[in-house]
Length: 515
Image 1 (cartoon, rainbow, N blue to C red):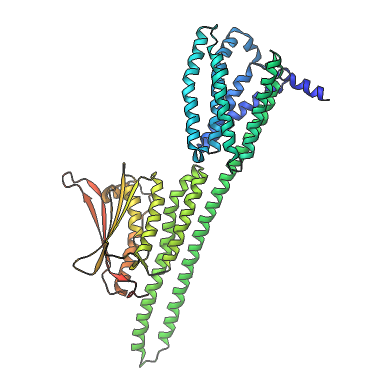
Image 2 (image 1 turned 90 degrees about the horizontal axis):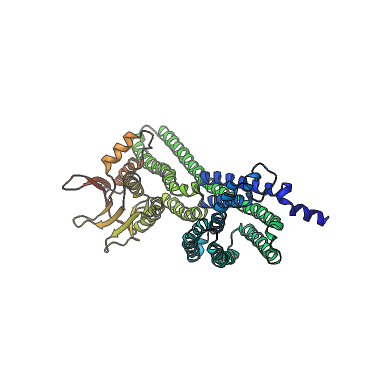
């Protein structure tokens, strides 16, 4: 029985098994090439081309199929002479690049990855030059010596070194990758040992290479499939968190609306039950109470409208990594986003927060948005040394709409370095705070023109909400809460140089603020 199986594999070139392996390789080439164009991840391209190189290398050994007669013709022999060494070079390079990329060794071992790339790209020109010499002079064996005594040892060093680094990895696909590498290495080792005994070992033991390539392809395909599955699961988890957050905000909104309706009905019933003599005085008091309560509930409703708006814009920064299937970076920024959400929810329950708390939320928001521009936003904060940020109070979530407008309407379409600067100082003439938010964006006029040309572009409600809130705080704290927006222009050319928002607020401190 064992002899029958062995004989079957020894005749792989004639009985169709070899043709089956080659067909699998060409199928993997097409399949993973399509995956590369869909997902834009490099390891798909590396493995696709690696499978193609192996398939081309094995074509010449297959007998009894439609293309086998070609390799016995003069044109076929010329083709084999032309592709033999380039396919050896490319197969080794693509195999190594695939392993380095799918295992993400560049993150943990950047020096090794850089050395491996430099080694291959440094050797490749010499390799191809010697191959060209042999094509012109068939008696030249320089390429054979270079391949056997330099290129193969170098590739073996990279293989063993990479194998060792992968063992130390904690990724779930590690087992499949190590198994595939081991199978391929063992098949090469067995063929090499046979070649020392018989000069014809390459043709007699080619089935070992067939089996090694087939098993290796299966294991690597499983590793790639598992990697893709983990990306999809992470994407689904992030989307579920986003949906849960939106549902939570909807519950808050509905609760506030119900409270508002109940309060109005209760007030109406109290007014109708008053006696005619005391009705006027009582009505005035209840009206004032109703107005204050209505204003407070309306402020809460405005907050519930701001949260999903704020969350939606912040999530745009993370969404691009999910599209690119960059799993680790998406997880990293999801953690930072969760911390930001906690800060927003805590602030939304308060009328006033400290300047320090507000600036921390803005810092986290800007950092997440800056990642959308490849960390191209230069963010600066200047606070007067005389002001204590942990004692100064300002309305909660006051600065976010202005920062959002600066980024989305000013800096988004600006080319080059993007700058966002926030300054806080105390007015010398009055006991007021002056907060400035300045950007070097395209300016309001250019932004409005872009919005006019793109009617589908959503309109920001942030400034109108802020105006309503500032009117409420002006009445409650008997002060003047206001803001002014300036267009920054060049004195000579009158070209837009950005936008500057100036907020004037009464100075409130922790000791005397109303809660």
